[in-house]
Length: 190
Image (cartoon, rainbow, N blue to C red; front, top):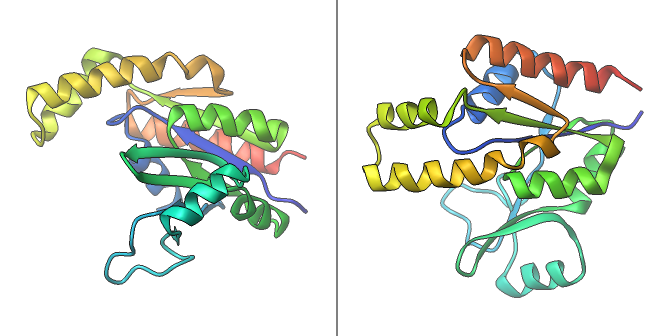
């Protein structure tokens, strides 16, 4: 039996990683993370094919030209990250449910490519004001950086309607349960 593809996206600070990690740590979902590709050098202790697929600049650009990515992004000038089509296809063909934790534009593009083989979830803040309060509560960024993140979040929230399901993270436990239900219902459907 083929596995399924689960796409999860959210603006920064909406709790996406917290929700996903809680679901996995509690054994509530049966998924494997897709191993991303990057053109940065491995850090100490990182293993090719486990932490990332490490590609040279030339290899990454050639893979882009050959259409080998389901999504990729130039995160910083000259620094790329992406999801190889072969990574997703191999895992799904082995019956694994593959979780893609990717940016909102990438999520929309991957859903278009895989259609009904994928479900896309968008984790949302209850409001931009609540997101601002969360970011300020972290006390890790300047007000200027928070304003930049909130501006980016407003832009990203414009993509929510292009996702199959939106989960509002107003209460963490409720959001964890709702996300787990959506994923489990999808992977158990035929």
